[in-house]
Length: 170
Image (cartoon, rainbow, N blue to C red; front, side, top):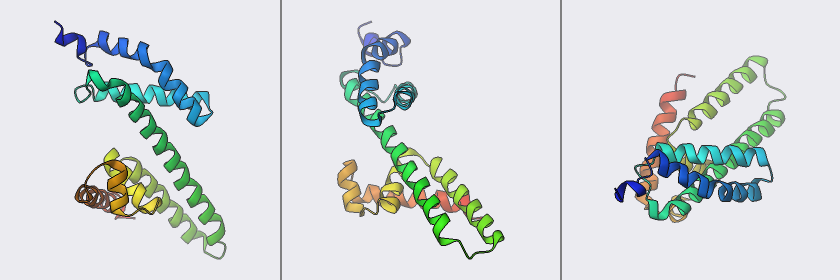
């Protein structure tokens, strides 16, 4: 019975965790985003992710786990915004003398790439974005994510294989 009170997969325990920490996570996200709607979306996504991974979460470290999930979701949104912004900037400035067909194919490729990156598993996507967008070295990524360089290499390898498979036909 006592063990069940700390089982996050138990709906009553999960509801108690939500009631205890949702406001704190929302305040934290609002402080970072300055957008209440976005903060609420991140909180909702945080608790959805917690529910999906409830077997992996520990009741004793749930608060830090929630804040880590929320912060990672926030960082993914920022990184995605940077990717979109860079592509929009490059698209406007670089393609003035290109044919309409080339511009269409290029936009189709960029859309496919963006979708393929979005469906990568989170660990692979984070490593890919840190390496290719943030231009960080594998050692820096390993330090930031608190994993080995070999783990970074493996995640990057699988991310590249997945991207090649998804957009290789275009």
